[in-house]
Length: 135
Length: 384
Image (cartoon, rainbow over all chains, first blue to last red; front, side, top):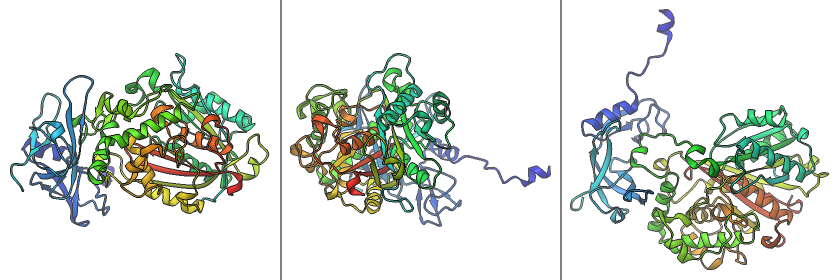
């Protein structure tokens, strides 16, 4: 028993599991580093800007801007968009802009988050659609 | 890199293994060993002289063990750093350090790949990234295409300018007897080829070949009485900025800015002092990014810079004189071939593609998705 007590505390949930649980509730979660004073993405155990292990979970507004975009052409099947999205909270992620011709996705375009629901073995993941009007 | 001595080591042997599509049943250790044997012969050294072994391949988890066993050597110094295609430029810096410290006297740097023979999926198993894999990026092409999209957006770079890089590489390849591609290429043909990841067609993207090779380095003292004129390591630099493209700080500025700065400082040279430029052209955007970040033209002007044959044979700046990863050979981790070509240009061994009176060369490696950058500046005895 003594040996066991000497172990450092074990994390109950991985950063990925927490992120994924939020997605299942329709939320795009990210981390906030109080020491660095900035958003952290992808979720992790150590802040890459400060080295701190204190990271708070926050829910993003889901609003963002296309930072970079491409259309990938698979050997079979329809071409699809792959984009990097700068979220308003100051973090960037890879995603896909849907509900629009993939070639019509433009850098600087305002987009908003929606969940691509889990299918079979594939967990839910965030995608984006063009935001209505100007924001 | 602080602590490394300018001219503290010299490349004395350089050779490719078999390239293109190798014989059935050949494996990566065969190709590494063949490269080392040829490079040792090039240097006038025996296999037994090698006491430093440095190698990288995507297809063997413990290639340092397999290669030592295969060659029947027990190296005093061994290093299997793997950071993608730029690994071999990192290896050069490590070899210089090891030679300077006396950890070894003769260091071989080797590479092998059979990705064409076994298929890319077999050769390089993709790691699952829960934050990227769901979007089915066709890696690495999609990542570099994202960088190209940003360059086009910020600087007005055009698909025709990207294509000019591929055309120049092809023109050089036609002067290289061992290049994979043998037919001329036009800008129109690049633009109208099969689209892979916009703005890249298949002609904006490097070849998928087998291949390998080796270079051998030693101390300046030992280098003097070997078979070929020594080519000195004048400068080294390195920078790692990210692993995945979604974490790259700024898609139009690569770590080559930093690695180049370090290498020029160590070499006490500036871009205008460089006679031959060998940069890692896995994609057409790479050549543009690295010409900018290594100071051959201002940021944003790379697209304009490569137009009109400026980097083609007969142009103002000789770039990727072997035909590059785009038209000569690209087995997946291409960096070693940039070093081999730079050494051959400085020795004056390049025949129809020889750059006259080349005394200095830069060999710039890129790894991952613009992730690891490493620059090596080489020079002839006259530059030391």
